[in-house]
Image 1 (cartoon, rainbow over the protein chains, first blue to last red):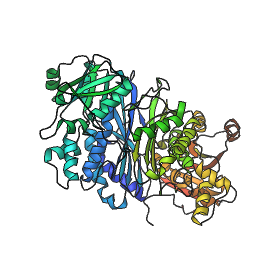
Image 2 (image 1 turned 30 degrees about the horizontal axis):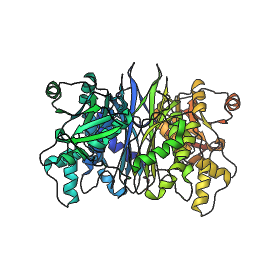
Image 3 (image 1 turned 90 degrees about the vertical axis):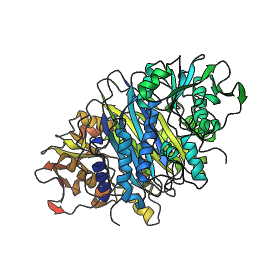
Image 4 (image 1 turned 30 degrees about the vertical axis):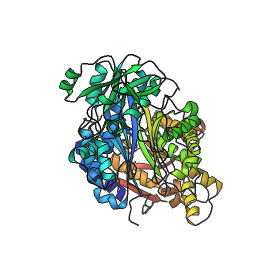
Length: 314
Length: 314
């Protein structure tokens, strides 16, 4: 990286908005203004890349989140995909589509993006600004790691672990959909998720062989992991770590949690929790059987609830 | 790269659309389906990344382009930013926001993306699919090069060159805006631009010290280059290579051309054109003076026309 000085930009209103974003980002933005960003991938490491769209009316509503939170949450969601590969962030590309009515909020969005990025020491390295009818952020997260963890590495006999406590985002959505204001705790879990970068790298160091972040909902995401690994995964509903006031099924289907699920040989959860200040809970096993998720509750088989799917039948 | 086998995906309508995109991409798609794509950057090379949004009603209109062309053009535009750095493509990330009414056209969009990618031997390595009201593609192009060419390398005394012949996209827009159908040639220049990857690498090998692709319009883009390099650039309008029926001012302000402008010591344009099958024209010089563009026409100073700026005053 050649330092934090950005290139001089030409004249025009579009560049005025870019300049105000850059002013807000300060030292978080590195050499923005060329046709493309230039990054160094550390020797011996692979490049890891993910792209995520956060769209008004689909991924958020502006009566739920303020502009700072819209920027923060989109950034955290994108960085969470790096965590799911146990990769360390190298940079973010921000494609922002900004309605005219939101121009005065561009700086608030930028502040949220900066907070999300700087929480994991990730520079903002480039982007694209468009004027459009619907507020939208497509954030591409670039990272690197020597040995990325894929969804496809789960092996029979391994244990299944999840970080944190689930259900906050579902509880917040339940309140909003009922016309109420969610409690502070649930709203914060929805508006201010934490990408689990350090924890995921710690899990990789402890032998995790597959990983996914919880975005569609715990069971749906474990289903993706089981499909990719071609294994059967048993999850015990009663063991899913959940916030007070959240039912096991709600915790199991709550999306956009951005906690991390891994399969691994046995991990010392007490030692992990004390090192990372983050609870780690064993919730299931990789077992014999056809590819998919098998839910248990006190040894009883139960039917899997669906995770969030933008295109499911309504 | 671990081969062309993609991960097994879970159930759901969203994944059905992803599966149909992957079917269309065939061997152009590599290991899609994990949380993030994993790529190798060649030893000794830097990673080059650009992200570009192509938005219905802003960057294209669906009465102008069919779905194949929408996909192709967005892909070519994004790859053109790699050309502007003299980088070779490594992979594309495709964030697609698809209105319900366009679901049946997802494969046509995918075919256009594949054609744009495979023309420069670039695999499609990942993406994100959302359902939304406005058709939009945000394409992130990843590439690599040992020594990237920035906008900031122009030096006094150097010459300014541009590839191809300008004005086609402006002429096509002029026809559409007048309610007419553009001629075949102009429409093709708008709908099917060619990212100048090989030509740009050839220009770098011939000593180019700065480069930009023509997206806002030749003079506007040379303005960006002059601002970044902190130099004065003289451009002779009469020397701008233009298609028949296009005025010099129209050629100078025509956007989304995706031709390449470089500054360099003298280049043998005849040899270049015969090697790359693409005309290269000397159009100006880097001269003494304050940072910016100085237009000439037979030695007379003229006022610079504006390039396209999404946020300029109307």
